[in-house]
Length: 136
Image (cartoon, rainbow, N blue to C red; front, side, top):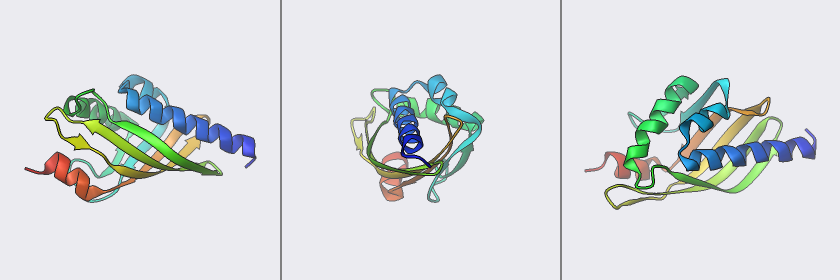
């Protein structure tokens, strides 16, 4: 992979997370390749697992009501690209409708194909997610 291709893939991924953070679900899905997917680590029922493009949109759309601003802000801290994959260290922030803050730390492994995001593998603090979304 040339350094130009690596930079291009990083730019695609950076725009993808900007779009995710905007809460614009149609634009987010447009940035995903047909046949693409998003996988979430862990064993949290209702959150962990693989979502194809068709099921990912409703998941994100449904989550918008939880967030005061209507979206979860994901901010890449660093990125490393190799081949068609981009490794992303990121932070997240959302103020929830009930006033609590969701502040996850992430690692994403993103596969880019033909200028679109083909696969996202999300690794996060599942205990924090459980406490925020499934705690009493």
